[in-house]
Image (cartoon, rainbow, N blue to C red):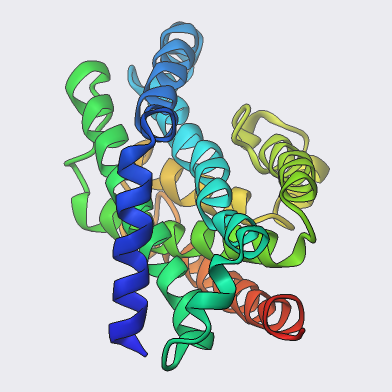
Length: 258
């Protein structure tokens, strides 16, 4: 199955690299938006916390919100492959059933990690985002969030019946989760009840982890001053398992049953 999944992942990668618009949206747009947000928020939030807090929030929010949009679009190629008949031909290959879904997961995760690396390295170079002060914790958070966002994209792609339904449903839910989860503005400045509502979304747990690392220098474990990132990462891993389970069930129900 792994061999088949890698073949399918390479096929998707070639198609992605040929699409210049998709490449620009995946890498350039998050940087542009983070630059605008970081510049706008740097003054007010720099007075509240540390000088780079506004930029850190901006780049974290783009790492969370834009990654979900990009990975939903990537996973959504399942819909195109089904409508074009490509999926039927792929299913004729050995171990194609689980390999197709696993291949999508591999390519979306790989793309996610590259996007996160480019985004945060840009933030470190031009906005003094403290990326290297706790690199191990940030790397772990990026890997876990890449897994969660990839599983979310697959769940959306397999739950939707058409590409248009996928685009409408994912846009509504991603914007809603981003709003209450703290990607638009820090949950820390919102009322207590609003902060609790946000915890129902994976966005809040990802933003909490990024904020703890980039704002407070937190590691994996709690300290006397600040909590660590172990709990947010554990919750994200649990959400990832649930989302991938749902994606697998939706895939079997809607993409394999004739």
